[in-house]
Length: 178
Image: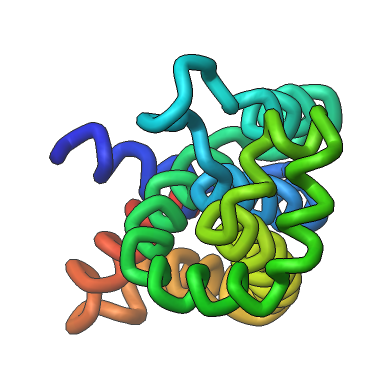
């Protein structure tokens, strides 16, 4: 539990840090995509994690914020467990692509010939795009609007003009790392 708290706090500190908004946004997008990609197969004898490993290596090469990658990996894994019936429906609608993927060895090894995994991959790309764009907008908003307000409250608290909210302001500034 404490490690989850530390991970969330590091992610929130990324909003205040010198990381560019695109680094945080791409970290969220890669984490969401990793959460939806299949890692292994119980029905096959081989590991089909190569797409997930490729995304993780790409996240390392692009130099994104890794705290957001791993936080949203966990969140997307929990969400993907809830979305499996929707993924089956999407995969069923893409049955023609799944049959074509069964004849291409690389796509078959990625698990895209399985309609459930194909639906999860499509949902992962959709969820990663939405979450990445949303996090980019939130990071820009937080740094331009909320962070100056928090810094002003902290400055007023240091001068002694905000005495009745000092515990709340101190806790908020500590949590956000301001």
